[in-house]
Amino acid sequence: MATEPERNAMITRIVGEYESSVLRLAYAYLKHAQDAEDVAQDVFLAFFRAAPKLSGAEHEKAYLLRATINRCKGHFLSGWVKNRRPMPERLPERGADAPKLLEAVLSMEERYRVPLHLHYYEGYTIKEIAGLIGAKPATVGTRLSRGREALRAIIEGEGYE
Image (tube, rainbow, N blue to C red; front, side, top):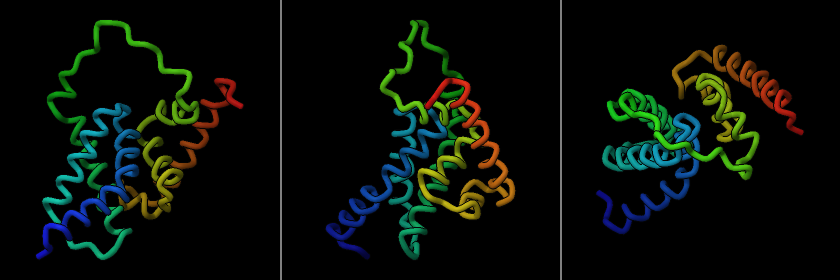
């Protein structure tokens, strides 16, 4: 059994190493920063409570990203999300400071948005993405290809340079 300082060091290392990946993936799914932060917090708490014995950094990252995907899917099934109503007041438009490419990616359907994120932002291969999202590698390859085409159409249609 690990001592308190060893456990604290492990928690600090894992959160420091994977926090941005988990947050980015959750945001790619949910498109809402606060919801993404809630999901990330839940994922890390569940990870430390379960204390899985994993054989290396790649397994830790894959475990956390798979848990993030599952938690995001569960988030959409929650009563809070199902019963949420739009705010009555007009919200300001997204700021001009927001990166245009990120805006374009976030406007895409989930089936294209998530594989694009995992491939280009997280560096996963098609086979690894297939394992993470529970799809066949051929399906992931098709979604990446169609996602790139859709992204190209979005960018060209809005006059990006």
